[in-house]
Image (cartoon, rainbow, N blue to C red; front, side):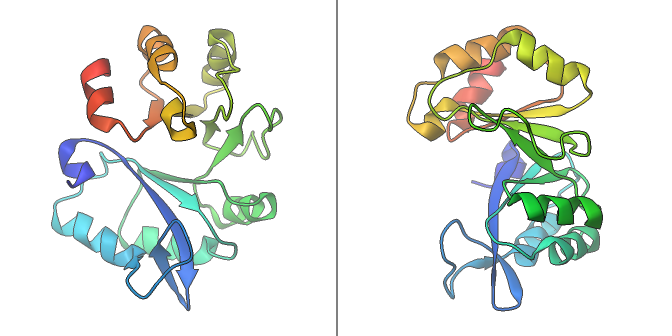
Length: 185
């Protein structure tokens, strides 16, 4: 299934293999898809920047290469996240859009003022409240919620809270995209 054709965003794990940027969660292999090949496929399938591309950074030293590829393909609806703190500073300095993480382990997000949004994670339980979310929204940041099933928990409680709040700048990273589409309408 092509997520962008179905109306879903995509989350990609990027790292380097030799001098190229590849899509790979783990150590890349010869068969790992090239990032620019993927973007070329999107372009050929009439990608129109309605699809959000969430780019999980799995290796250091990629900011300039990623920026160059994103610019070449005229991608504007994207964000990077999950890089190391020193790398986050490099992404900021390179003008690459990034989200910073907020979780029960990272209560003071790095470069929060510079970040375009918050990657809101809950590794063990939903620790945040509606008030916490409203504070983030009031700060002008977008929020990408990590769905609980990605950490082995049920998503019902979080999804119900998000449905009640309904906000245009909310994003949801989930393995249950079809269910989410039905649930959120």
